[in-house]
Length: 199
Image 1 (cartoon, rainbow, N blue to C red):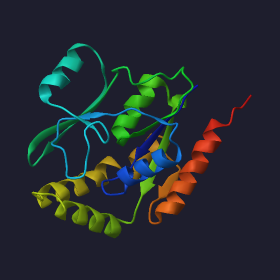
Image 2 (image 1 turned 90 degrees about the vertical axis):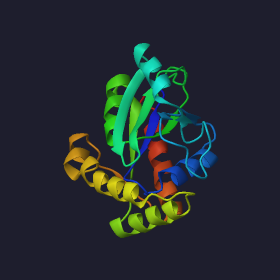
Image 3 (image 1 turned 135 degrees about the horizontal axis):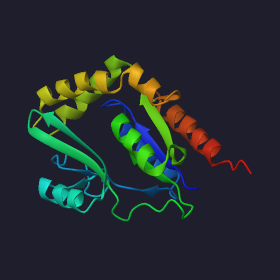
Image 4 (image 1 turned 135 degrees about the vertical axis):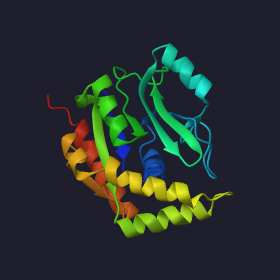
């Protein structure tokens, strides 16, 4: 059965960087791009990080019963939704593995939809100070930095990724992203171990 490797972590733990690096080294991995109604950020590409859409398309997917998981956050700019759709991107019987980025909440819903045995959690960690510095640097590079949203998200992550929640969902293994090369090496090893056929 195919595996969906699911990258997670608090904001500014380097998920996008790790994702891009893994895709370079494992080009055979399929991607399943999720959707968001938030505006595109500087440096992002349509169809790479997300499909950037609007509330109208989200409603259409909901009406068609194609939404696997949906999260809506009340930001300082208003509500932003993030969702995964059953839009033809997934074929778990085809033998191909997938790489995705998500949250604990979306991970839980993906496990429910596809079965926990199909989803491999890859939880990224960074010390809080380093994470905050990275988030600040990223925000400074935006055309219109919004530091209030950065702070809101930073604080929300403490609740969303609490130790209780991680334990509840059985996320025991952590991948430290202080050193990118070391982090990538550990994740590649994890992928190798998960592909070993028990037969």
